[in-house]
Length: 364
Image (cartoon, rainbow, N blue to C red; front, side, top):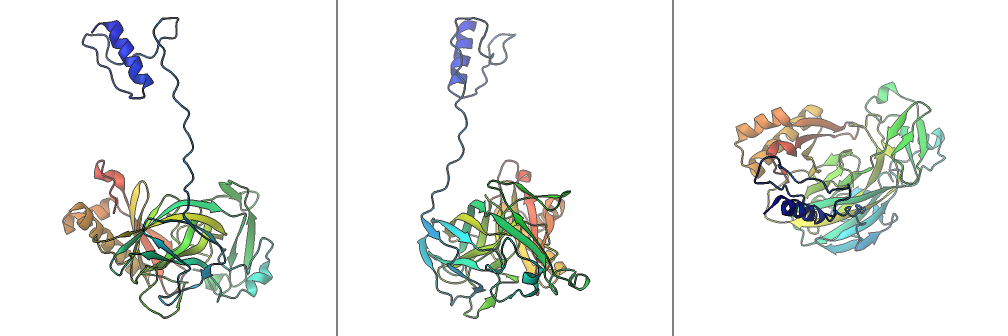
């Protein structure tokens, strides 16, 4: 094949989008040359089609913000039954269940009733889910509402004894906003996520949604954002999944007791996984990391559990010896304090970057 034919072949491959490297058989031509733009009669490569925005996920089922409950229990009747693989659009209330509004004041904080706290949209019964299975929940879309708030409630928070007075700030969000002004000098980036996600525990007792538990619940994990997949151990038939307490922004720890609380619209997908690795508490993954969660009554205990769960993951999913897994957790694992205010429990997570697996994504 002569040089002219080689160049024409390269151009054809560029046009077809193959992006192949054309290697010539003689010195001086080591790669495909760009199309000639100086008047040559060679056929020019066409510009690539502009990238299109990813299509919106089409939800098969919808739940409104008034289809809620605020306890965790196997006795709560589902508001929806869906097959595994279904995609569901839900709307959520902010954490006080409309006790606060865009114009709320300190007086509203003082008279806040904690009984309606955490309205959760659901529960959703997922057909085929049985105790011992894992429910995979993928957060496809999270759309922020128009307003939010953060507050200090007397007697609540990591430094409750040092901040006895009530306080509140409210915020308005522009459509598509990626940040919001805290004051004239400080801007907070927005990264919305659901603070509470969970399946029903194996009890008909009506449990408070305030602390995190093995079923998930009030994990307040700011890394569970759009695009994240969360894995929940299933304790009851149908799993009975619920979601709410949506946050527009939060730091690890949620130390004053509240995040930037806001109503939202979420599209998520549920899938039942059978016969895989058993989970004791929720685990999750993003594009670049795999994470585990652990609740306990102290940070030390929760951190030990999180470390143990990561060792279990590395041993079970990547075939490492337990000793090697423990060392990897020390070399590459990051412990994160997710929340410290939801007594009697705190939540600690551990992340492991997928990049350490030499091209393998490390999915659970």
